[in-house]
Length: 188
Image 1: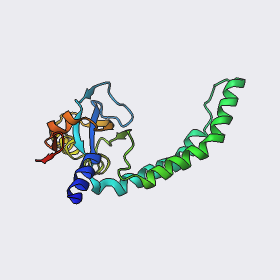
Image 2: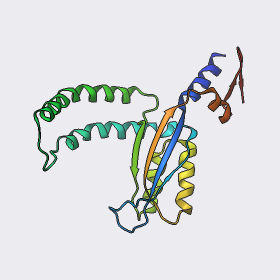
Image 3: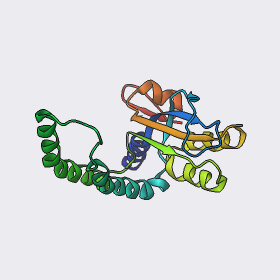
């Protein structure tokens, strides 16, 4: 019985409510993202465990590369005393926050950032499919985006992906995963 309970708990922990905003590129230029966006309704989805090694490494790489991006000064910005104090405080706190986040990412069963963006190249279709297959670790969502890639007239230019854990019994019932009564679990 404990094996079944562990399997249900594992599946429950992998379930997420996923939302995607898709930016469609209508212009044949690499730097222009058109204002055409499609907000897709949230779906209950399951994290694909085969993507977790790649997602973990990419997140850790992003944490390491974040230092270089945040240390660049903003041109033309006048710094007040408050701004200077705030930047010094951020620099003092940054190593601790980075260490805590890196520790979390290394230990997480499902190291997928709660919200992230994916930018897709316009012309290399094989690379586009590889990026979608790797950087969208949600099964139904990835399949839907791969199908859309084949039928859209204008290519997807960027995706904003967000997810939250499922903790709603009604969502579980709707997904067909488990139906709970007072003392019994019925598995579908």
